Amino acid sequence: MRINVEDTVFCLVDVQERLYPHVTNKDEIEKNLITLVKGLKIHNVPFIVNEQYKKGIGETIPSLRELVDEDPHFEKTSFSCCKNESTLEALKSSNKKVVIVAGIETHVCVLQTCIDLLEENFQVVLVTDCVTSRKQNDTDVAIKRLVQAGVIPTTYESLLFELTVNAKNPVFKEISSLIK
Image 1: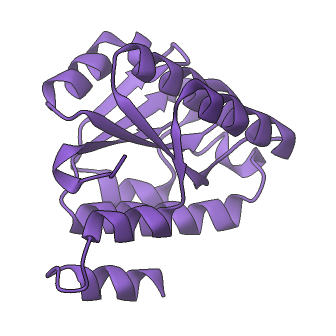
Image 2 (image 1 turned 180 degrees about the vertical axis):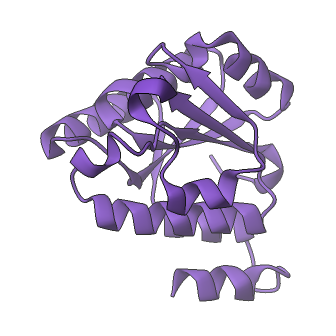
């Protein structure tokens, strides 16, 4: 399946201040997430930002919050973003068939969100180098399970160039310089 920019919406899952310091590869994941978010913004992909129980886990980490501050935010207590009616309604009303997912933790909120998105008949794209958990094995097993369930795995670089399609695309130079 080709991922087309006009068919996509981005779902950022729970990249929050009090949990983020405890995940594996946090510096690399943060760098990757920033590049992904900036690239998706260049492509004008709509965003849905989710935050789990902000009173306990805090806000989206500052480096991402400044990039997504103007986008719709949804607070939830369920692990799956789709179990929050407002989030699910926003995804459905986007009229997009492909949901790009990134965030934390891979084996809990990301996994349950992706499974529920599949059940809602969305095509789900997981940006595997933009997800993590506290333990690497949890991330690895969750990604394997999601791929077996029908989620499409990708990397942020591959995704951003797939959405760009062609070196003659007006955003190519901007995407290319962002990746370097």
